[in-house]
Image 1 (cartoon, each protein chain N blue to C red):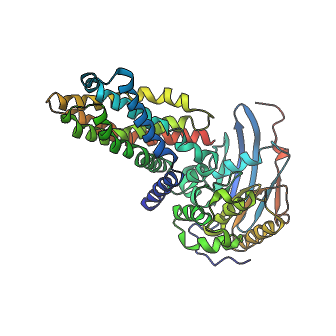
Image 2 (image 1 turned 120 degrees about the vertical axis):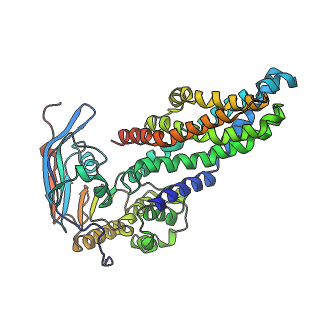
Image 3 (image 1 turned 30 degrees about the horizontal axis):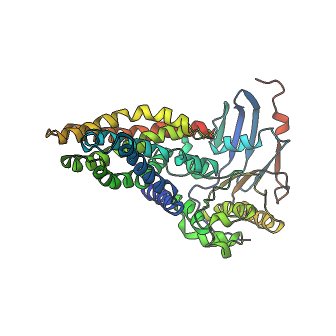
Length: 222
Length: 220
């Protein structure tokens, strides 16, 4: 069962790398969205530094959502999802493998890009490490929660807008504690509680989201 | 055509449906449908379009729960052992599950690997004369070649029960003959086939089930 899990994970990563679309466009969107802010609010370093952590997190949230609609849809449309549902790997674990691959190809590049963009946004030096740590702990939750929305809208053509309506409200806790962690370390306070809550959000999502997403997929396969 | 002798992971056993009813949306597709199938036999589903051949096959695969009635494997209800049921069947639907970015071999090797049966991939490709296309990406395969690649799963992964939904669509005469040979070999090993088809590919001798007879006369 573990072998099947990693085989599915490996296939999805390989597909993402060969098609090159999802991961690259996610990062490019992230970079562009963040770049718009200095252009929009002006290059004053004090203003940028003030909004840096919030902008970086909001842009990351939107970027992570951008590639979600294809998470299950490609497999749904070409019949692979039928076969996955009939395969020896329980659908819940198949969902977890696919979301993990989604995170590895979109969340991971976001984490790598975030400190570079933090420079652009004049983020206070004290916040860099915390930003990367908070992203690393929080982005898995984004992929996992997004997976529920992707599973619910899998049968809907152009379900992307509906997907964002479903998923964005659920992203709010990650946003609050992600920004909170960065702000705390800039203010010289401990960022530990916020990081622990982010980790808890991701762990809870890793348990609950595959159950919900698999149930939604089963309904869509009927 | 010969298939290698097998130790079935799950041996063939009598498979039956009892008083099956299928509802899609608000529509009653069929009701009180019963059938039984012995190891080594085949069942051909017939009936006009829309009488529920595809629905019945999805129901038999466990993708669609029956609104009423039971599926029986070796006289035991399938309902309680869905995971075992999934392991003993192949479902070939209208869609070929071929990824455009993966080569033919990678596509088949993925499904074979998921089932833990990676050893027979190349032999299975040869079964459907796909050996020379093994390194071609799925996006360059024709509709018939994709269908053959999907059917190659039957040869790569042993399973006693094959559920085939119009398997001969887009196949040329030669490939239909290959499929017929594969089904005959499967039957001689005790395997079972339930297929919906308007084309004869060697099932004509077996039993037929006309779904027209179970169509609901009054909408639910």
